[in-house]
Amino acid sequence: MSLAAIAEKDFQDAVRSRGMIALVALFSLLVAVFAFVIRPTGQGEQFATELLLRFFVRPFLVTTLVPLVAVVIGYNAVSGERESGSLKLLLSLPHSRADVVFGKVVGRGVALSVAVFAGFLLPAAVLAVLAQTGGLAAFNAGSYFGFTVFAAILGVVFVAIAVGCSAAASTQRRALIGGVSIYVLFVLLWGAVTGQFLGAAGGIVDPLPVSTEQVRTFLRVSNPTTGVEILSNAFLAERLFSGENVNRQISAASMLVFWTVAPPLVGLWKFDADDL
Amino acid sequence: MTAIELRGVRKEFGDVTAVRDLDLTVAEGEVYGFLGPNGAGKSTTIDMLLDLVRPTAGTVRVLGRDATGDGVAIRRRTGVLPDGFSVYDRLSGRKHVEFAVRSKEADDDPDALLERVGILDDADRKAGGYSKGMRQRLALAMALAGEPDLLVLDEPSSGLDPAGAKEMREIVQTEADRGATVFFSSHILEQVDAVCDRVGILRDGELVAEDSVEGLREAVGGEETLEIAVGDADGAGGADDAAVEAVRAVDGVSRVDRDGDALVVSCADGAKTRVIAALEDAGVAVDDFHTREASLEDLFLAYTEGDTPTADEDESGSDPPDDDAADEEVDR
Image (cartoon, rainbow over all chains, first blue to last red; front, side, top):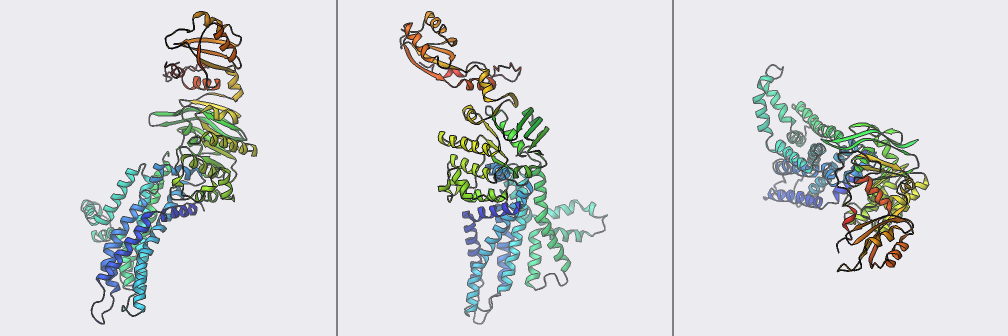
């Protein structure tokens, strides 16, 4: 109840920001540009929805831009209110600090999802209309919509990580440093960092009943961007939670759940002990 | 039942002790004024009531519950006007109040609350555009939601003009008449004077006085202080010893001091005109005179800036005495 009230208020606050409109416009514009680039040129050529999604929308938009936006939306969720003093107003009301942290995850997660859906589906609506009127052959609306869901899921996961970091940070500066680190780690340096880790931890892994290769795969799947990549590929191939790599999909999905829940919990643990 | 009960409460931030060994009890239905200069520990104490800050030692009980363990239940029955808060810039005033009503699971009409604090006309504007006084009123409306059993108001009049401060006092009075307990802090005494059943004065994290307003007034004998500028620019017509003696002889005068060309006279209420008359009879040109702050203010200053009547032996009270009130009016 209390959590829902905070989530709703935070959502209303977020969607009223100018950044929200800019975000929807940016997403729409990028999707439109990509769609234009891969448009069918020859007679009888079909619109390559999978190509658009797999090689343009995902690498440039979903696994690069969406996490960045999510971190920007989430990093000041708690620390910003703490620094401005609106947290005092919030905690004067009968809310627990857990309500605050998880309410923020929900409110901002939903706000980002709305931006993703609006930004992705506006150009898609144009494509669908073109496909209906025969101007465009075979735009696969189902694939496109499903893919958008995965983009939103990845956004929510990164919002959760960023909000957790925000709750743990006592100042905006620290929250910002944390947010940048999250992005750099998960989006840019995951392979390098986990590689280093494996190299250093070789001695620890060896006696365990798992092979280094299994650990490497686990670490790869642990990254939420990779997780969403695996799941969305399976979805586009119409083999979601079936086929030969179902185990990998399940571990990817559970890691996404882990990243949505664990960082806010750790952040709350620190936030709950602080004097505000 | 007691509304607020602090026992041996101590709060340290690093090596700074903000509140030390504070015992404080506020009865249900009481209006309690919590006084002290800025930095005395008032806000820290209030933050402990609301579980924003946890005590280093001691127990804090509010409405019969433990403040640290039961904060949400306490705040469901408490209205809070925090100090140094900010609003959600992009949300309207009405949205703020709706949120408060919903959070407290109350059924108040948000417009009625906004009307009560006098900002209904601006209810649809974004709160980011509100003035300091309007934000203060908005937070009060949020505090009043759900007919709280306890109101905790931290510096409620800050940012309000005199008319606004008066409205604030009237609202406090109405809430008290309804049966609510009111606990509010201030560094300005006159705000407390009119509405409080009891006041406590905090200094350097310790309660140095606690009494009814009448009790505190009696402690200083109901006197007021006159500052009288005498003589003209070249020194002629100043007060000589004879004139000082004449004033001292006036009925109701307890003390006369020279302060440069001015006289500082402590006297009973109503002796003012006799003092002026005595000076003029003695051939002294009275250039200007005014009554310095109410005597209760002097008591407050005495308690909070050094020479306390209770001779509190506190080595940290390093303020030089007696140079606070003399710095106005002696510049001629």
